Amino acid sequence: MAGFLIYDPLYAIITLVSLERVSHRYHFLGNIHIIKRRCTELVDNKKLFVGNLPWGLTNDSLRDLFSQVGEVVEAIVITDRMSGRSKGFGFVTFATEEAATAAVQQLNEKEVEGRKIIVNVARPREERAPGDRGGFRNDHRRSY
Image (tube, rainbow, N blue to C red; front, side, top):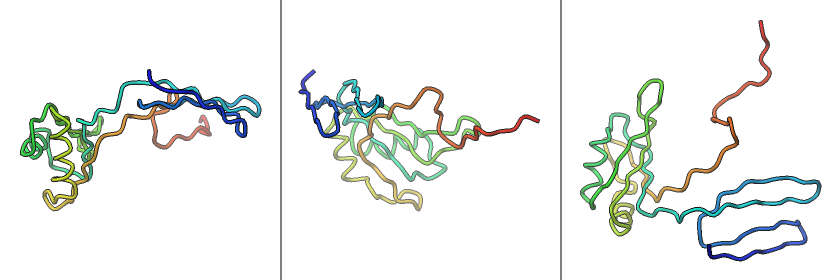
């Protein structure tokens, strides 16, 4: 792990600065904030996020669209677990970084079935607190 420590006495923050992707966990101890960071693998520049997809687009049609640029290893349209309908975004993984870069340049804001798709390098998924599934949550429910 390549990196170095920085101590900032003004905020009493200890951080690990690295060339690698870093995920965060924050802890508050009195007036001292300590940031614990766990270094993980480098960002995969071969995996692309594709947003604003047409609702009828399938995994195969997404693969066909991106295979014009280079060899596609994987193409997935993200669907809702309950209904099975597309959520309007997906991910495409290329065999090489060069093909992924070319796909971003050629296909970003390209019109597909009447919608301008958004293509960029996928960011790592952020860590969530245990039990945090997102969405609306009402903790003040009454029992009847």
